[in-house]
Length: 489
Image (tube, rainbow, N blue to C red; front, side, top):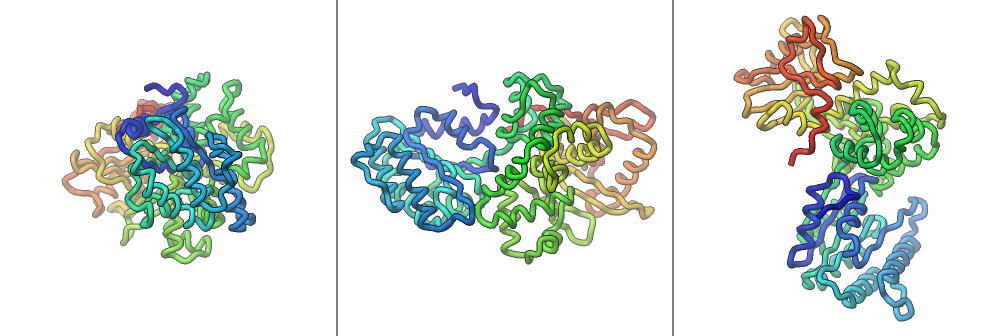
């Protein structure tokens, strides 16, 4: 079935359609970064098949008196039951979650339908800070009744990724082993963003799409803020620089993570100040939190949310795990907006300057890392065993650093990737050639290089490599157009 309002998401759509066609009850959890389109996906795929939907309400930390909070969420749940068909005149408001789910059962028993879809959105907010009661009753509702009906599809969504993992996906109580499907919704790729632009009347070059992606990321909510009557420069200026509400939007991204919001923001801010990332020890020192359990948990939650990534850095005596901020929106905000007042026209004055190209050069490297499947396909690499960063010294003692190294045992090749953002073809100078040769020699002499492997220098650029006397050092080239290939499955 076609869904004209959905861009991409083919795998997720196929999963939801398969669950609807099954001959048993299904329990699916969908999680991902705020603004990524979780409930929108479910609503578009299931549409009128949804017989009941409820959404949790976010409450500021200072307003979370447990009884008041629970009553607010129960009242909203009750209102959703009435809107879905329960008779208000004969239905009393629930005073606890057991009563609420008994009312949901009564509603569903009165609906004649082959399959009954239930959507509970922002489940972490609905459950609240003391969530054990709600989760316990949800588990009882599923185990004692819904599962045995064989025609129920229960979909729960949440932006508080850590909460979803701990209380639903990895729960060892009443929900343990009950989930039949888990979907992690990722940002759009460049290819999916291109489809969005074309569908919505934008006539952008891929170069402009790239700049927009490096500022906003592939987050549908932010793409919806773009206007096709404005240039990308005007759009970025309006969204980021002309509206004071951008500061609250940055905080709202991490409000969705629920507990310890301030600690998450502290980590993100300090990582935003070090583009290539930091070790856990360095983060610990910067935000004054001990290494170990608490900090490890915070970092794991940010990784599961798609906000940061962890990658290995080789070259020292021990391999270092480096944590890097990869949320494009947050990176742009922290680099250009944090601590400043809104002022229209700032991005127009930055665009095209050395400040712009420094930002674009850094962020383009991250864009490439986020599109590794497309790079792998372009280079015809059978399989990548690992990708990592490496630093070391050449035989003559000169330092060398490689920001992206792809190792393929099947191809017996190590691919040394150089990533460059320019407005035209990249011209390799004599200095570049000497630098590249130094990196190749340093890596070839290192313990990391398998002596049976070949080494190839790969240039990943926006517009390609210009012909010239120093260009022959390049073995393979990947250009921006290659990154727009459809996502590999």
